[in-house]
Image (cartoon, rainbow, N blue to C red):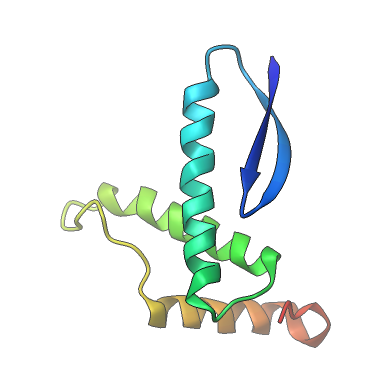
Length: 100
């Protein structure tokens, strides 16, 4: 296994990568970076941890959505859904755990 240095939202990470998996890892990193930057650039979320959680939820939603026969493959969470998720995260974390 080799290591690759990647950058997500301006921060460098050293990741393990199986031999021959460089292209797949680079594509995954690019997708995560795009998703996190889009959330950050929307301006409503500032904390890196919250951006990461929302990006993970968006990507998981995108992966699960094509599994439904009636759903288009390119559907992503809309702003009201993201806002609702942020509120649910705040409620779950409580006052001490709020990221914003």
